[in-house]
Image: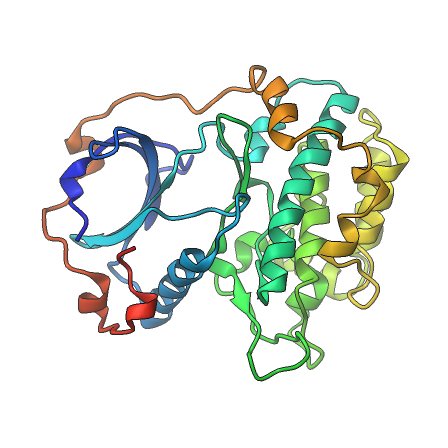
Length: 337
């Protein structure tokens, strides 16, 4: 069992307001290791069976991943009415924070090159294992103090059925409203053709636009209209119009060609392995960490301050395992790891 008292909570860093958020993220000091870590606290009250299943699958999946560019969980446990997931602390937050720096376009493109290449490394690994991430976007790409790029947001990931020879899925994403802007049209269509792991490549292209321009196409539209535009096949034209009208920032031709490769129809869209060979990435000569560390001094890390236990509502000492609370007996997918 995890000893809840070993964690001293410091600051809430998820950037959300306090209005009924069932999930929050905090920095904490681990008295056992002496390290600063992050803890994702998930309130289990009012969670339906489907929500609990998604949470269980997320932890089981992350537990099985071993890749430097994919988030890992140190531990998972139920404390009171919450599930706590402890993980490394990425002191520069998400890539959105990193790209908010005031730097020249050629510097930003260099950063893009290395961040996107790291995400591609993660996607190649996931796709080879049969997973589609389905939620690639700027806030799910984390940056550590030493410049490591890490893909998070695994709660929407899905794995292909082992009995299917071809990678085709028809399952729609739970809680998809906050991902519609980045989602590939075929994922949203829910038709008989389904989709495959190339939906992540489309989302990677949208993320590249997001980080390059500081905003994304469709950001002035309601979710329902975005959905209709994508399903009607006119989203590609809107993306090109968005780029052409954003004249204050100009990137290389290879960057725009990379976007074209990401936004092709699903049958012609490049795979993660193919995209990793794109000319846009040919200029990479040193490691990602070396490049990113050159820019980190310009970025603003997540500030650290202490709050009282009363402010964060430290829960009771009860530490029942999730297997006991929810009736899960599968040891291979257990929560204590």
